[in-house]
Image 1 (cartoon, protein in one colour):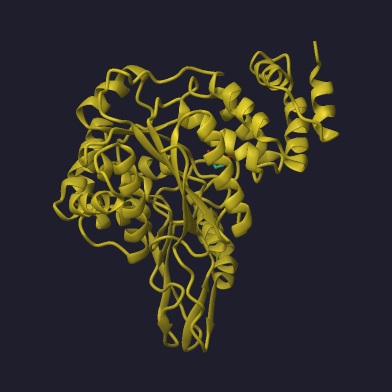
Image 2 (cartoon, protein in one colour; image 1 turned 60 degrees about the vertical axis):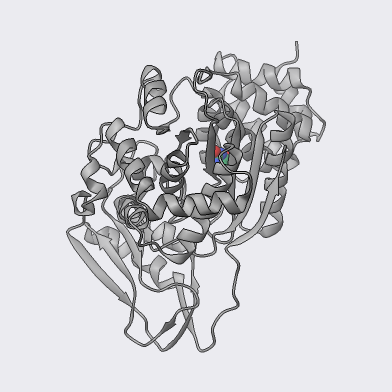
Length: 438
Ligand code: URA
């Protein structure tokens, strides 16, 4: 039998691995015959030399079969989820899940924590007092039947190979690899027994794949592998040059979601949330066209049905649903500082990556996997790219608790904003939409 060393060597020398070799490696890793150092070396070889589509399909299958699958076959409605490759201020999951569920789609959303400079839906939902992000396998089905949506973390049994490999990638500088991201996302999502998946691939400074060309390659890879695994996928390539909406940080982002569901949303957040929700509604078979689905998504918000659904999701998972009517129940900081514009002009940069890093330094993210996040800290953007400003106008409000953290975050905030005499070129929010199996 081929040894881990030979498999690493083959990939190092740019040769193609067979499905059996990939399966041997992944199974061996789970049964501890293959060590962390083997996988770390192999990940770097994949990062440097890439994978053919057959190899990515085999890796996705091996990671998927490393654990159990949710059995949702007793639910008649179509099951559709949405996933993002990671962004700053990207709170659309908590908006689209209730909208799609309010429109009759079942949403079994398995989601993750903050990673690097990006935020995580799980950390955000945990800032709702009492919310339990880990319902047991027995609880998931009744919640989905009665509410239509669940927002939960990856348990030990769902794609455990992805969880372990992901943690290794985080510390071995092998996150930004198209085949590894493709297999990671699809292996997790396929455990949910889905009929369809809407994927938001981010591009721009705050994305893991900042260049448009790389984002397009990633989108194509997910669509092609998804096609081979017979799941309907729609991919939107969307802009992450500046944060989405106004809030960055866990409780602040929940507050902005609640504002949105109650009818007060920032324009970019509304555009993207309605687009993603509409694709979910159409993939879920509740609308024939994207136009009809968009109208349904819009109405779910304007009639209050989506806000009500968010309340039900929170209640079903033990949280305080009162936050939906009174967001002051969410954690808040001891201090709020104003960061002001040094000059007249236009905001030409409001850098997503730097602002994500600033928010994490304030305490919204982690340096080590076992760090605790501070739910209350973060940033609220008063001005964004393209806005005209006068000297002294507030660019953002900094919500902070610890002086030292504030000091460390300030250089990032200072560098994130640029003010110039002329307005910047317009960047579209949705760059492209790709579709796999129809
Ligand atoms: N999201 C995932 O689930 N996996 C990756 O590798 C990157 C983003």
